[in-house]
Structure formats: C-alpha cells, structure tokens
Image (cartoon, rainbow, N blue to C red; front, side, top):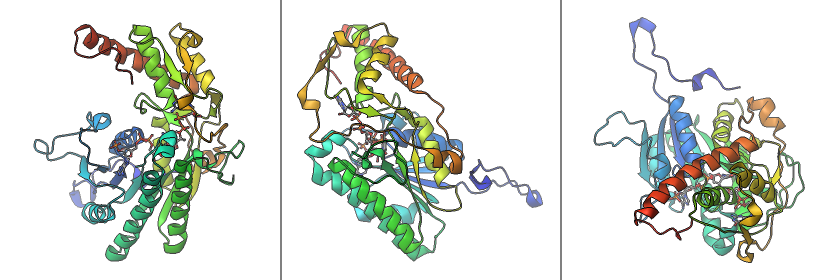
Length: 369
Ligand code: NDP
Ligand code: GDR
C-alpha cells in the first residue's frame, strides 16, 4: 500500500514551527493528453507541485488542463507549471530535470495512435521508444550529477505490447506487438527494465489496458463513437464510418488508472504491473450500449469503411490485474456501462452546444470530428 509520506502534507508543529513540509514535485511528459490531465488533478489533490512538459504547437493544445491552469503573472502560488520540451530533444529533458528537481517523473508522452503509427513509423519509434530512452538517460545522468537517487520513474506501457498473444494477459505473458506503436512500447518497456537493473533507478512499467473518458482523443474508437452518438441524437450528423467491429478490448476509466500509476511509485520496490478491468467487450458491444443509451439503433447509422482497418490487427485484449490488486491495493471503480454512459452524456451536451453555434452560422455542421 501507499506510504504515509505520499499523503497531502500536514503543517509541522515541532517547536511551534507551522511551516508546511515541502511539496513533492512531479514532472509529467504528455500532460496535455487525456491521462496527463487526470494525473495532474490527482497529484495536485495529493499536495504535489506538478510540472508539465508541453511541446510547441501552432495552436494552443492545453484544452484538457486549462481548468487547472493559473496564470503565473497573476498567481504566485500556482502548483501546476508548464515548460516547453519535446521527447525528441534530449537537451530539453535534462535541462528541466536539473531545473525542476522532481521526486517523481511520469513519462506519458507518445504518438499514441496505433493506426497512425503505420503511417508515421519512424516518428512513432523516435518519440515512443527512443523518447523513453532519452528521458531515462536524462534521469540517470541527472542522478549522477546531483546524487538525487530517490527520484522515481513511471513508464506508460500498453496492452498493445501483447498484440496477438491470447488473453488473459498478465505481467508474465509474452509480448507479440502488431504495430510500430506497439513494437516501440515494447522497446520502451525493456529500456525501463534495463535502467532499473543496470543503474538501480526506481523505474516502473505500468502495462495499462485501454482506458477512456470524456477527455479521450476524438479519433480513438470509443470517443469517435460517443461523439457521433451525441451529434446524431442532436441532428448534426447521420452516419458514422468505422473499421473492424469485432476486436475486443478491456476498457476502463482513465481517472481510475492514473491512481495506479501513482501507487506504483509509492512502493518499496520498483516493479511492473498490469492495470485492467478484467472485463472485455467488442467494438460492436460498445456501439450497442452507446447508441442504445439514447434510444438509437447503431445499425441505422454505422457504415463500414476499409480505410479504418489496420494492416495487422490486435483481436482480443483482456487483462489479468491480480498483481496490481494484491500489491498496490488498486481496483477499478467505474464499470464498462458507467464509462459508456459518462462519455455519451458528455458528448450529448457537447453536441447541444455545437448545435447553437451551427444554428447561429458560426460553424459548419458537416465539420465532423
Ligand atoms: P494522448 O494521445 O491523449 O496524449 C499523448 C500526450 O503526449 C499529449 O500530451 C501529446 O502532446 C504528448 N506528446 C506527443 N508527442 C510528443 C513529443 N514528441 N514530445 C512531447 N510530448 C509529446 O495519450 P493518453 O493520455 O491516452 O495516453 C498516455 C500514455 O499512455 C501514452 O504514452 C499512451 O501511449 C499510453 N497508453 C494509453 C492508453 C489509453 O488507453 N489511453 C493505454 C495504454 C497506454 P500534444 O497534446 O501536443 O499532442
Ligand atoms: P487501440 O485503440 O488501438 O486499442 O489503442 P483504438 O480506439 O484506436 O482502436 C480500438 C479498436 O477499434 C477498432 N476500430 C477503430 N479504431 C479507430 N481508432 N477508429 C475507427 O474508426 C475504428 N473502427 C474500428 C480498431 O481496429 C481497434 O481494434 C489505444 C491507444 O490509446 C493506445 O495508445 C493504447 O496503448 C491502447 O489503446 C491500449
């Protein structure tokens, strides 16, 4: 279980000194992503200071964390701070480690779309595999230079690493990756194990199965479906184009999964853990629940489009999370049906707002996500 030092710091009363103990400092790559936003909220609630590395983009890409952001010009006590860096730029990673002096490093950044990794394999490997290596090497050299050996590292591993190996998949199941993304995650997994064994770094791999939320990227299948359900219900769209409906996934809620990441870093010993609901559903079952929830029949709206099929598919993922349950005391709180309903509720409300803009002529209803 988590140690007491990880709880929200209480003011010290020794010798009448009321100065609170220093906050733990977390560094998160991928803070603008789905998991980064939930992890930031979680760690701020634990009393951490959170530093996020964001990459330069021609548009602002901080929508998922804007509600937490405090303008540094107006607030001196902002506990979330953002810095420009990139997993493809080793110098930026080392510089921010030396500046921020984190206690915990969470490597969540990735080109995380499996289908897109077939289109940009070289870039995917550079960010997902070599990016993790760059960050581990930055941590190693930072520890060498500063002696800060208490630093802890989390690597965002994926159930995609199991690929075609049949379920249930646990920490001892062999990897058989089926995409450039998955092969890159396997490399990142073994880099992490190697830095733990070679240099004694406290480095953990979380092998997380699919997890979604209302903040899920809109081109992953679950959010693509719930966005379409909202828009179809409100009359902004009539068809939804999808690929393979027979693949099975073990879908959980992202808010539950970030707790497991933190728990891994609170243990006495660094280790690797599968995080999953142990329940699995096909894409078709997701469609049934999502459309059915708002009184629609998915068969009236879904059109199969070959462009969404992958050169190699992962057919069946279902995790065995007994180690995380036993050692971390972790378990998921949100069921599959609750997750689908949470996402559909969010996206029906979003579609209603879109409709106001469409009716006022500000946006085009044909602009589909
Ligand atoms: P997202 O795609 O939502 O977020 C990815 C994040 O990585 C974004 O903040 C993105 O920035 C950032 N990023 C991408 N490329 C770079 C780069 N070159 N340098 C720095 N940052 C970069 O992913 P999730 O939040 O869903 O997932 C978090 C991690 O967990 C990822 O590593 C993913 O592969 C892994 N994972 C996710 C699972 C899931 O079901 N969600 C399951 C298992 C593993 P920007 O906002 O600018 O695009
Ligand atoms: P996945 O998620 O590949 O499991 O990776 P995704 O939602 O992209 O695909 C799940 C399954 O749905 C099928 N599918 C479609 N997928 C997409 N994106 N779009 C479609 O139109 C569509 N139609 C059918 C896919 O073929 C697949 O079988 C996610 C990512 O978050 C990874 O970063 C993470 O590591 C894994 O989950 C665990």
